[in-house]
Length: 110
Image 1 (tube, rainbow, N blue to C red):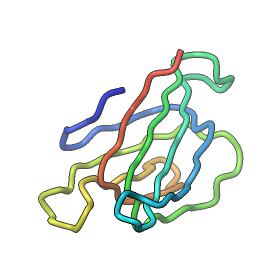
Image 2: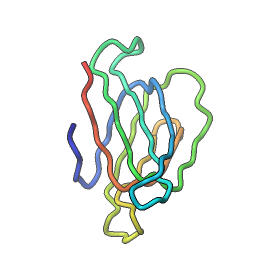
Image 3: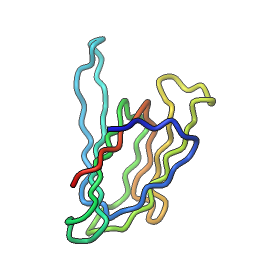
Image 4: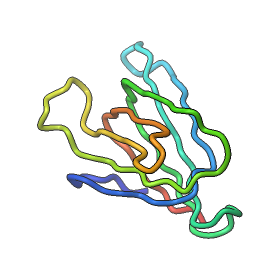
């Protein structure tokens, strides 16, 4: 797994799934997470990626019906000094979702 520390990045792929969930963190507060699976092709057979987002806030979800080729933009907004928020995440092609998060990881699945 690798963590990203860039200013802005775009990740492309077919959105296979998206999950939002929460858990009780070390400090006893609820923490929200998001996980997405993307694939290079429609049949989920080549170059899959799992992206995990931690401490998700202010998420907005559009209508997701069917398989979409997505462009996900991840922008470093740490300089905006929002509490526990370092990144803005948005799906650019279809406005399927947007949210903020503290950190994320990208894992290549083969």
